[in-house]
Amino acid sequence: MRRARQRGAILILYAFALVVILGFAGLVLDLGLVYFRKAQLQGAADAIALAAAQRLNGTAAGVATAVTAAATNAATHRVGLADSLPWNADAALRFNSSPDAAGGWLSAGEAAAAPAGIWYARVDIGALASTAHVMRPIFMGLVGADSPIDVGAAAVAGQAALKVTPLAICALKTQQTTQRDNGGGLLETITYGFRTGVTYNLLNLNPALGASSGAYFFLDPLAPPGTVATADTSTDAVVAPFLCSGTLAYGSLGTGTTALAANLRRLEAFHLAAQLNSRFGQYAAPYSGTNACVRNGAPPDTNVKNYAGAGATWHPTDAQPTQPSARSSSGAGLPLATIADLSPAQTFPAGHYGIRWAFAQPARPDGTLIGRNSWNTLYPPTVAVANTPTWTSTPYKLIRETPDPATPSRAERRVLTVPLLDCSTVPPSGLATVRVLALGRFLLSAPATDSEVPGEFGGVLTQAQTDRLRTVEIFR
Image 1 (tube, rainbow, N blue to C red):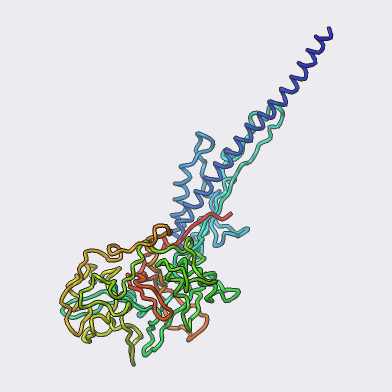
Image 2 (image 1 turned 90 degrees about the horizontal axis):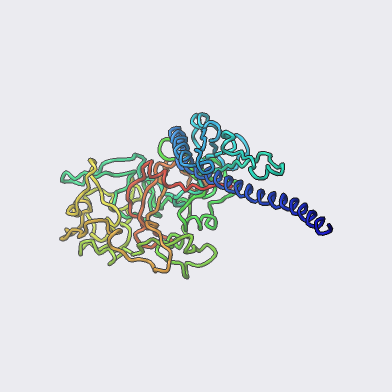
C-alpha cells in the first residue's frame, strides 16, 4: 500500500513537472519563432529603406522612383515562410531631410512637393496590416500565456557621405560648353573653360582677368549646403581626413541651375599634398603625422604609376612633358590658365604642354573623338612633333604600375571629383558660399606638391553619375 501511494505521488509530481517542462519548451519554441520573425522583418525594413534612399536625388522624380523601388523590394520579402509582406507605401514609407528627426516625416506626396534636401527614407513595418507584425503564441497558450506579441521593425536609410574631393576650383568659364577653333577646320569642345586631356595645376587657375595667383578652396566637409556651420570646420586639420578619403560627410552639393551654395574657405596656401598622394600608396615620412592617411581608409589606386617626365611613354619622343601640368599663362585681359588655353596661333616647346591624354581624349562638337595625328594642331609646338601618340586606349588603363599586393587598393582612386565653382562673386579670402556649376573629373596624373596638384581634365559628371556618388547606409 505504501509503495502504491508513493507511485501515485510520483505520478502527480511527474504530471506537474511535465506541465512545467512543456511550458518551458513552448516558451523556447515561441521565442524562437518571435526572434525569427523579428529578424525577418528587420531585414525587410532595412532592405526596403535602402532601396528607397538610393533613389533620392533631391527631385520629385527621385521621390517617385524611391516609392517604386520600395514596392519592388518589398515584393521580394515574406512574412514567416509563405505569406507575402502586405506592403502599403502610404502607411509605412516616409521621407525627411535628416535621419534624426523625431517627427515631421513626410509622405511621398509631401516630399515630392518640396524635394530639395530630402535624402532619408524611413520604413515602419509596424504601420502595415497586423498580419505582418503581430504574432500570437502557439505553445505558450497551453499555459495561458497567449497575449499577442508585436514584432514590428523600423529602419531609416539615407545619405552617409558624398564621394567628392573637398578641394574645389573656379570654372575657367561659366558656360557649360564652348568651341575652340584650332585652325584647319579642327573644332574642339571646351567644358567650363577646360580642355579635355590637358593636365592643369589645380592650384594655379583663376578666371579673373589679369589674375596672378590661383583661386582654390576647401569645401567644409561637415556643413552641407544650405546650413551654417557652428564653427569653422574647413581648416586643414578637419579637412585632412576627408581629403584622404575623397568624401564629404553629407549627401549632396547640387549643381547647375538648381545648385545650392557650398560652404567653403578660400585658401592662402595649400599644405595637404600628402593626403592626395595616399592615392599613390605614399604613407611613410614625410607623409606621417597627426593628419596622415591610413591605408584602410585611404587605399592607393590600383594603378599608382607616375606619368611625369619619362613616365609618359605614349607621348611622341620629341614631346615628352618637362613637367606634369601645362605651363601657366596669364596677362592683362587674360585669366590665369595654361599655354594650352591660349590662341592656337602661339607656339611653345612641345614638352611645355605637360602630360596629355593619360585619362581622356578630346572630342569635336559632334561628339567624335579627335585623332592622335592632330597633336601638332591641338598643341602647336615651336618645332613640329614628328611622331604621334602610340596607344590605342587610355594609358591610365593600359600603362600600369600596381601597388604592393599586400596593400588594399581601389580602382580609380586617382580620379578626383572636383567641384567647379561660379567664382564671379567670390571674396578675396576667408569663408564664402559659392554656387557649384558642375562636378569635374580630374586624373591625379602625378603626385601632388604644396604648389602643384596636376589634374588632367576628363569632363564633368552627368546627373546619373552624380547620383552614384552618394553612399547610403542604415541609421540606427
